[in-house]
Image 1: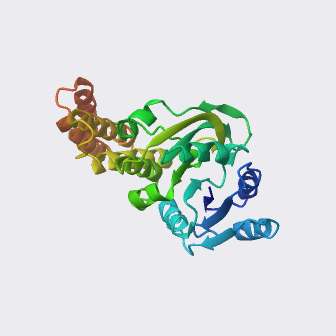
Image 2: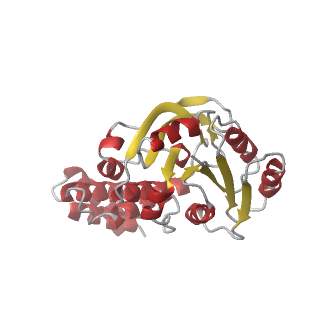
Image 3: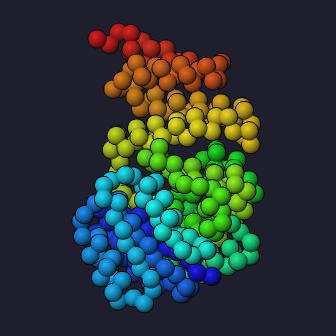
Length: 295
């Protein structure tokens, strides 16, 4: 079973050599590597080409020329992949030596998409932060599980067949973050059979701290996710309303200090989705008051 290993890179020079080394250490030896750099020019190309010159496997590199976002980079990676299985690896993540071997066994048994256990670590210090195992519900009800929560913590823990990727389509470039959750949900909607690999074979680098701008972006993109699937018939209407209302309320909470009017607008939308929610009414009154009386 040949596997296309797909790395989307952006300013990845400090970490990509280690990521590729973890690919080269795989016990499953039938793989190709494709790296697409998302418009940055920090020496990543030289590192990839240097490693490629010392490896018998097919290693290809391409640069998008300008920064277009991770969804665009992953779409180009899918275009360039030639194998019947694809495995994503972020440029600052690592795999244990058995990652491809364990995943490919589940795919050979009939799965369309495999999710492995994840070890998280602090990128700056290397300190362990804990393990995250995929919930069992992901194999039983992937649509409901992914709609309720983003349970696949990194794309680096996923392998899927090209057949399922073709049925799923392209990554949605409208998502600046969370494009992977959207993709996995669409893979489930495309009748992909999900399988869980309980072994922890993926090492996910977490970056210390996050700016408020990043937190706001995640909140806004979560709202977009629930707006996109607001009419998804596979999920009960009450759950669709509740999840969109929660995401709107969370964004409103983050906006309150800097944009009280926008905060009030989002809370009003949340209230209309779940009328009778006392907590929302209290927040709406507070944000509405700030919007009215702030000069």
